[in-house]
Every structure is written in C-alpha cells, then in structure tokens.
Length: 585
Ligand SMILES: Cc1cc2nc3c(=O)[nH]c(=O)nc-3n(C[C@H](O)[C@H](O)[C@H](O)COP(=O)(O)OP(=O)(O)OC[C@H]3O[C@@H](n4cnc5c(N)ncnc54)[C@H](O)[C@@H]3O)c2cc1C
Image (cartoon, rainbow, N blue to C red):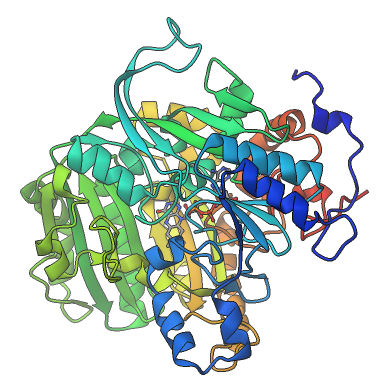
C-alpha cells in the first residue's frame, strides 16, 4: 500500500469548481502557476469560438478546411481530432492549459488542480472518439510538446537489474505521435515498434487503451510491448512503473484507459526485429444480387478462416450494405508472390462465377515493399496516393497520414459500435451462422472486420503479453473487432451553415444498432475496447475490461483515491456525475 498522501488526507470537496465560482483560482494564483511552469500556461480558446458569432467569414471558411488536416488539429491546444458526437459530446476548450515541456510542468499542473479542486483533463494526440481529452471548465495538461524519442540497445527497467533481460527499446515522450516513432524506429533504425494504425494518434493515449496496429496479429497489443512508464500520480509524485516498481500501476496503465490513473510523461516500448517485407492487398468485389452477396460473404469468411487467420495478416475486410466486399489488408513476413499464391484460390472462386461477382480492375491489388520503407514518406507513395501529407507551408516532412484516416479529421460522429467476434465462430459447425449474422447485419449498415484488433491466431508470446494487461481478456479469443460507424463532415452545434445533421445522425444510430444487434444475437456479451467503442455502452465496465475490472478499480483506489482523474466511462467514473464535477453518493 502507498503511504497516505497530502491529497488523500485532505478533506475532498464533493463538487469541483468552475470559472465564476467563489473557489475558482484568482488571477494571482494562475500567474503563480504560470511561473512554476516557466510560461507554459496558456489561456485557451477554441478557434471555433469566433465562428460561433460570425460563421460566414472567410476565416471561418478557411478553418473548416484546416480541420480536415489531422496535424493542424494536433497542433491546436483548443481543438480535438473529432469535433463531437451527436447527442454525446462537443469539443470544448479548457479555459487554461499547461502546455507541458517537462515532467515538472506536469507535477505543477496536477498539484494545482488538486489543491484548487479543479476538473483536470489530459490531452496527447487528441484522437479520443469518446471526447475524453476535452472537458469544459477544466485545467488541461497538454503533452504534445513532450515528444523526445531515444533508442536503447539494451534497456533494463529501473529496479529490474538481474530480473529482466536487457532489451532493444525506445523511450518516447508522452506527446509523440506514432508517425514520429515509426520514423525513428523503423525508417531510421531498422527496428519495429508496435504502435497504432493511424499515424497521427498519440503514443500514450493508444498504449493506455491497449492499442492495435496493422501488424498486431504478429506483435500483439502496443501495451503488450510496454516496458516502463514515468507517471505523475494524483498526489503529485513522479513514479516509475514497470514490472519491478509499482507493478499494479504498470499493469493498469496497459489497457486500463487513458486519463484515469495519472499523467504519463514518458514510455519505454520494446523494439522488435523488423521483418524483411510488408505488403498490402486491396480489392473491391461487387456482388450482383443479395443472394450472390451472401455467397461472397461466405467465400471471404471461409478463405479468412483457412488462409489468413495467422500472424501474417492484418487490417480490414469491409462488408458493405451495397453488396460490396472491400479488402484493405496488410501482410508481413511474406513477399508479393507468396501473398499472390495465398489469394489465388479466392481469386479463382470469384473468376468461376462472373455472373455473381465483379472484381474491380486494379494493377495494384497485391503490393509489397521493404518493411523498412513502409512508413517512409517517399515521393513515389505520395504520387500514387498511398500516403497523404500535411499541406501547411513549412510542415515537417514526417507529418503524413493514410488516406483511409483522412475523413476522420474534424469529423462529427453520428454513431459508433464495435464487438469482438470469437474465433470459435470460424469452426466449420458455426461458420454458416456467422455468415448469416454478418449478412443480416449488412442489411442495416456496413460492417468492417478489423482482423488486427483481435488476437486469435497471434503468436503465444503476443497472447501472453496481452493477458498481462488490463484489457478485457476476451481480446485473445477474438479473430476480429467488428465495427459499424458513421460520421458527418466537420461541424459544430449552433454554428449556422456548419450544424451537424442531427436527424440523419439519429437515423444512422438506429440503423447501426440494428446491424450490431444481428451480431449480438450470436455473441450476446461481446466485449470491445475502450477507445473504439460506443459512447453509450451501457455495460462499459464489463465490455471494456471484463474480469479485469475489479483489479483495475483497486489500482484506481490505490493511486487516485479521490478521483482527480475522471473520464467518461473510465475506471471509477461510476462514482461521479457525467461531467466529472460532482461526486455521487
Ligand atoms: C482516425 C483514428 C484512427 C485510430 N486508429 C486506431 C488504431 O489503429 N489502433 C488503435 O488502437 N486505436 C486507434 N484509434 C483510437 C485511438 O488510439 C485512441 O482514441 C487513443 O486513446 C488516442 O490517443 P491520443 O493521445 O491521440 O488521444 P487523446 O484524445 O489525447 O487521449 C486519449 C485518452 O488518453 C488520455 N491521455 C492522453 N495522453 C495521456 C497521458 N500522457 N497520460 C494519461 N492519459 C493520457 C486522454 O486523457 C484521453 O482520455 C484511432 C482513433 C482515430 C481518431
């Protein structure tokens, strides 16, 4: 047990203060904080605020173009990547933010929030779908400027000498984005670090939620590769968490959800051996009737179960409501001809029924590259449209993103649900039922099977590492995470000309609920993971953490007994009002 702290010994108020309340810190107190953090305190405004009063100005029009660039959004202290979710939340700037550069800045911010009874919120890459890095009337700790990256040939965690074999590793500031980490570890140094698929996601936020990347079927969760983290806990202490020091905190940081146990300031992740090649398979197949589409779903599910359920294959198979199967998959450790040979039987099946299936022509159906060049922003990739760049003048070369993630920058979510599908559904006796459920679901909404976001078929080492995280343990039995989502373009409530389409959002919400109900008939209590899931998930403790929730709650009670760190559907949030301002009970 920890010794009682200043924080837990003090009487904790039941309500947090907002600007205008008597307890809100005076100008002088804010100035004092600014001095403590060497000028890193920012009085924040959302760039959208001006558009609320004058939505038709040229500046406002430009802003609505700029928010389609994920790196523009990452650089804005007052914005988030998703601008809101209809009927759930709206992005709002905190009145003050500490744009931390050092761990000391974070300590000062945490102490200030606790001592002044403020609502505290933490933001890294700002990609939360759930809106958990945005909270009105709060003090924000913004980590984006803490983005140093350093490689180790033989890392041993603090206090782990003799207990842990030295490992190749990378230490990353909490505010780094994955594109920067891939550049340093893979492009520059020829190693592999397990991060996220989306290049502009923040490192700490992703690891906190478990974290899946395109090749997770081979390397497991990002959290499974975490070796050590530096964390500022609610009492303002700086703690090194690893298997040898604060092991329960360490476990909770791995998949226990961001913004709930402390502010992580840096992370050290294992660097794996880089395979020779990475590659991609892209194809679009149209079925000519509903009956043909049902057969097509059966074909691709059979083919996946027989040939792709292994560490080589990741990313997505999308089953669209318009009777199209879109394959956007990646592979590792195979060359192009091996990948071609694996897919040939499937392609032959399509070719044998031309009346049923139309395969869109493409010269680039199956491609491969040296693994080391996979994330490199080469001119060739840019010209072919494989990778998009930050188009702001003077933007760093490495600010790149996949075209598939582009529509999410500045989006307003309409609905989002997900469910892990157990690999047990792929056995012969149950596969038809799975096909029927998937087909039925697509009659309501398109379903994407993210096969890299379930670890069935992964190597034993990756499975063991995932079991040693706080994530819902059913992740290791799932072959895929099924996701149904819908979003609208950048918009903001109350802003003339940019209002989110609420009616459409509600219709889509209902359609997506019907689609997911078809899958839940087969998997009644399917889990999911905290970051790509339903804001309205009624049974969130069980869905996100399953049998690990009680242990996670105990870690929370030990390191944040007074609930300084609150996020929507985060561990311990059931004890607070929905806005995190009032303690319940
Ligand atoms: C376009 C897009 C693509 C995505 N693709 C993937 C994917 O391929 N794989 C995947 O696993 N997920 C993916 N996600 C989900 C994403 O990984 C999570 O939402 C993740 O939590 C985002 O981290 P962030 O730092 O960018 O976001 P933020 O919104 O800044 O943070 C997310 C949460 O973590 C907390 N947090 C952030 N930094 C810290 C810190 N230093 N200490 C403590 N808490 C912190 C925040 O308070 C917040 O609650 C995607 C999301 C988007 C929008």
